[in-house]
Length: 177
Image (cartoon, rainbow, N blue to C red; front, side):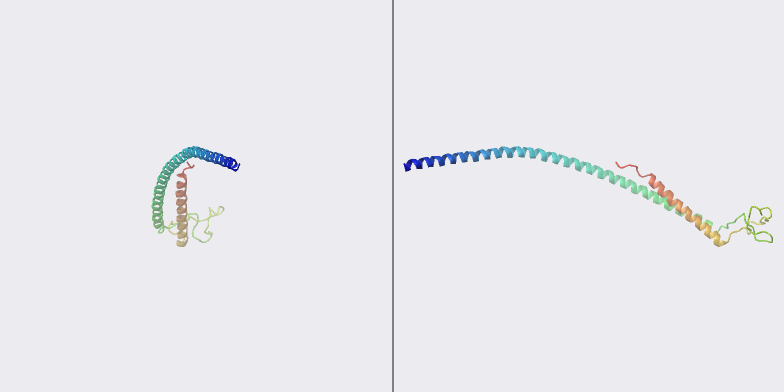
Protein backbone atom coordinates (compact mmCIF):
# COMPACT_ATOMS: atom_id res chain seq x y z
CA UNK A 1 0.00 0.00 0.00
CA UNK A 2 2.90 2.22 0.51
CA UNK A 3 3.64 1.77 -3.04
CA UNK A 4 0.17 2.91 -4.07
CA UNK A 5 0.29 5.82 -1.75
CA UNK A 6 3.60 6.89 -3.17
CA UNK A 7 2.21 6.49 -6.66
CA UNK A 8 -0.73 8.76 -5.91
CA UNK A 9 1.45 11.26 -4.16
CA UNK A 10 3.90 11.24 -7.01
CA UNK A 11 1.02 11.50 -9.52
CA UNK A 12 -0.44 14.45 -7.59
CA UNK A 13 2.92 16.14 -7.47
CA UNK A 14 3.29 15.57 -11.21
CA UNK A 15 -0.16 17.03 -11.88
CA UNK A 16 0.60 20.05 -9.72
CA UNK A 17 3.93 20.48 -11.51
CA UNK A 18 2.25 20.29 -14.93
CA UNK A 19 -0.49 22.73 -13.90
CA UNK A 20 2.13 25.09 -12.42
CA UNK A 21 4.20 24.88 -15.60
CA UNK A 22 1.16 25.54 -17.77
CA UNK A 23 0.14 28.47 -15.57
CA UNK A 24 3.65 29.89 -15.76
CA UNK A 25 3.77 29.43 -19.54
CA UNK A 26 0.35 31.02 -19.86
CA UNK A 27 1.37 34.01 -17.73
CA UNK A 28 4.52 34.45 -19.82
CA UNK A 29 2.42 34.26 -22.99
CA UNK A 30 -0.05 36.81 -21.63
CA UNK A 31 2.82 39.04 -20.46
CA UNK A 32 4.32 38.91 -23.95
CA UNK A 33 0.96 39.84 -25.50
CA UNK A 34 0.50 42.67 -23.03
CA UNK A 35 4.09 43.80 -23.52
CA UNK A 36 3.62 43.78 -27.30
CA UNK A 37 0.41 45.82 -27.00
CA UNK A 38 2.03 48.23 -24.56
CA UNK A 39 5.07 48.57 -26.78
CA UNK A 40 2.89 49.23 -29.84
CA UNK A 41 0.92 51.88 -27.93
CA UNK A 42 4.14 53.32 -26.53
CA UNK A 43 5.58 53.51 -30.03
CA UNK A 44 2.52 55.48 -31.18
CA UNK A 45 2.89 57.93 -28.30
CA UNK A 46 6.63 58.32 -28.82
CA UNK A 47 6.06 59.00 -32.52
CA UNK A 48 3.41 61.61 -31.66
CA UNK A 49 5.71 63.25 -29.10
CA UNK A 50 8.62 63.27 -31.57
CA UNK A 51 6.37 64.90 -34.18
CA UNK A 52 5.19 67.52 -31.67
CA UNK A 53 8.77 68.27 -30.65
CA UNK A 54 9.77 68.77 -34.29
CA UNK A 55 6.78 71.08 -34.91
CA UNK A 56 7.52 73.04 -31.73
CA UNK A 57 11.19 73.42 -32.69
CA UNK A 58 10.23 74.65 -36.16
CA UNK A 59 7.80 77.18 -34.68
CA UNK A 60 10.41 78.29 -32.13
CA UNK A 61 12.99 78.77 -34.89
CA UNK A 62 10.50 80.79 -36.95
CA UNK A 63 9.53 83.03 -34.03
CA UNK A 64 13.15 83.47 -32.99
CA UNK A 65 14.01 84.60 -36.51
CA UNK A 66 11.05 87.04 -36.53
CA UNK A 67 12.08 88.48 -33.17
CA UNK A 68 15.67 88.89 -34.37
CA UNK A 69 14.44 90.73 -37.48
CA UNK A 70 12.19 93.00 -35.42
CA UNK A 71 15.00 93.72 -32.97
CA UNK A 72 17.32 94.62 -35.85
CA UNK A 73 14.67 96.93 -37.32
CA UNK A 74 14.06 98.53 -33.91
CA UNK A 75 17.79 99.02 -33.39
CA UNK A 76 18.15 100.66 -36.80
CA UNK A 77 15.16 102.90 -36.10
CA UNK A 78 16.49 103.96 -32.70
CA UNK A 79 19.88 104.70 -34.27
CA UNK A 80 18.18 106.87 -36.89
CA UNK A 81 16.31 108.73 -34.15
CA UNK A 82 19.55 109.16 -32.22
CA UNK A 83 21.31 110.56 -35.30
CA UNK A 84 18.43 112.96 -35.94
CA UNK A 85 18.53 113.99 -32.28
CA UNK A 86 22.28 114.69 -32.43
CA UNK A 87 21.79 116.69 -35.65
CA UNK A 88 19.07 118.80 -34.01
CA UNK A 89 21.18 119.34 -30.87
CA UNK A 90 24.03 120.61 -33.04
CA UNK A 91 21.59 122.92 -34.79
CA UNK A 92 20.33 124.20 -31.42
CA UNK A 93 23.90 124.73 -30.21
CA UNK A 94 24.70 126.69 -33.37
CA UNK A 95 21.61 128.84 -32.80
CA UNK A 96 22.66 129.37 -29.19
CA UNK A 97 26.17 130.40 -30.24
CA UNK A 98 24.70 132.89 -32.71
CA UNK A 99 22.30 134.24 -30.08
CA UNK A 100 25.00 134.81 -27.45
CA UNK A 101 26.12 137.98 -29.18
CA UNK A 102 22.56 139.24 -29.56
CA UNK A 103 21.23 142.12 -27.54
CA UNK A 104 17.69 141.75 -26.30
CA UNK A 105 15.37 144.68 -25.82
CA UNK A 106 12.12 145.15 -23.98
CA UNK A 107 10.19 147.66 -26.08
CA UNK A 108 7.78 148.25 -23.21
CA UNK A 109 10.42 149.85 -20.95
CA UNK A 110 12.29 153.09 -21.28
CA UNK A 111 15.29 154.51 -19.52
CA UNK A 112 14.53 156.01 -16.14
CA UNK A 113 14.24 159.72 -16.62
CA UNK A 114 12.60 162.55 -14.76
CA UNK A 115 8.92 161.70 -14.51
CA UNK A 116 8.85 158.20 -16.05
CA UNK A 117 9.04 155.14 -13.84
CA UNK A 118 10.98 153.13 -16.39
CA UNK A 119 8.15 150.59 -16.69
CA UNK A 120 5.23 150.72 -19.04
CA UNK A 121 1.87 150.82 -17.32
CA UNK A 122 -1.62 151.12 -18.68
CA UNK A 123 -2.32 154.41 -17.00
CA UNK A 124 1.07 155.89 -17.68
CA UNK A 125 1.36 154.83 -21.30
CA UNK A 126 0.75 158.27 -22.70
CA UNK A 127 3.03 159.97 -20.17
CA UNK A 128 5.98 157.63 -20.68
CA UNK A 129 8.45 159.00 -23.20
CA UNK A 130 9.24 156.84 -26.24
CA UNK A 131 12.75 155.44 -26.52
CA UNK A 132 14.96 157.50 -28.78
CA UNK A 133 17.34 154.71 -29.77
CA UNK A 134 16.76 150.96 -29.99
CA UNK A 135 20.38 150.30 -29.10
CA UNK A 136 20.37 151.60 -25.57
CA UNK A 137 16.78 152.34 -24.55
CA UNK A 138 15.04 149.24 -23.17
CA UNK A 139 18.08 147.03 -23.68
CA UNK A 140 18.31 144.15 -21.23
CA UNK A 141 21.46 143.64 -19.21
CA UNK A 142 23.98 141.11 -20.54
CA UNK A 143 23.37 138.86 -17.52
CA UNK A 144 19.60 138.87 -18.01
CA UNK A 145 20.03 138.42 -21.77
CA UNK A 146 22.30 135.42 -21.15
CA UNK A 147 19.79 134.01 -18.69
CA UNK A 148 16.90 134.30 -21.16
CA UNK A 149 18.92 132.83 -24.02
CA UNK A 150 20.07 129.95 -21.78
CA UNK A 151 16.51 129.20 -20.64
CA UNK A 152 15.24 129.35 -24.22
CA UNK A 153 18.01 126.93 -25.22
CA UNK A 154 17.11 124.51 -22.42
CA UNK A 155 13.41 124.75 -23.37
CA UNK A 156 14.30 123.96 -26.99
CA UNK A 157 16.32 120.94 -25.89
CA UNK A 158 13.49 119.66 -23.66
CA UNK A 159 11.07 120.07 -26.58
CA UNK A 160 13.49 118.18 -28.83
CA UNK A 161 13.79 115.30 -26.34
CA UNK A 162 10.02 115.16 -25.94
CA UNK A 163 9.45 115.13 -29.70
CA UNK A 164 12.09 112.42 -30.19
CA UNK A 165 10.49 110.27 -27.48
CA UNK A 166 7.05 110.83 -28.97
CA UNK A 167 8.29 109.78 -32.42
CA UNK A 168 9.81 106.63 -30.92
CA UNK A 169 6.61 105.75 -29.03
CA UNK A 170 4.40 106.28 -32.08
CA UNK A 171 6.51 103.81 -34.03
CA UNK A 172 6.10 101.01 -31.45
CA UNK A 173 3.55 98.39 -32.57
CA UNK A 174 0.35 98.49 -30.52
CA UNK A 175 -0.04 94.75 -30.05
CA UNK A 176 1.90 91.59 -29.54
CA UNK A 177 1.53 88.93 -32.21
